[in-house]
Length: 168
Image (tube, rainbow, N blue to C red):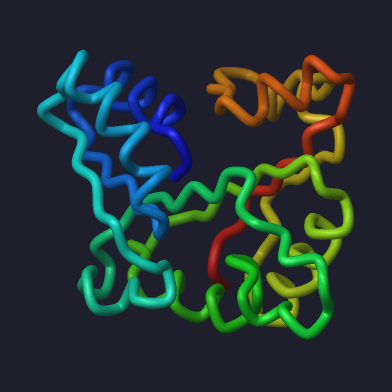
């Protein structure tokens, strides 16, 4: 979940929806907690845990949307199974998503994005929409909430890739 800007903005914008930020690294979640202490939100909680453990925390159908923003690309082929868009993760997401649930994924890494499109298809997910230049796509950029990474990468002129997928 990163440093929390994205989730805090979502939680503030939609106070009727509960949000849970899941982050593996304590040093990163600490940054989000610092922001939360200054501006606490009743509909936002944090969990310091590895995403591989999702099924231990969520019941089937409990989650409506999963946001994967600028996750580690694990660039070496031998580490592909660690990527949050590897097909085993898509299978986990399917188990906890509500009937009409979806995954939204953003990255500036085109290689990871292409890999993610392939893995989603291999895991039998429907790609509802995708772009390799989010900020110049009027449909997908509408209502876009930027993360800290997204702001930084965009300022450097890097295009942002986004996909929205649903289980079939």
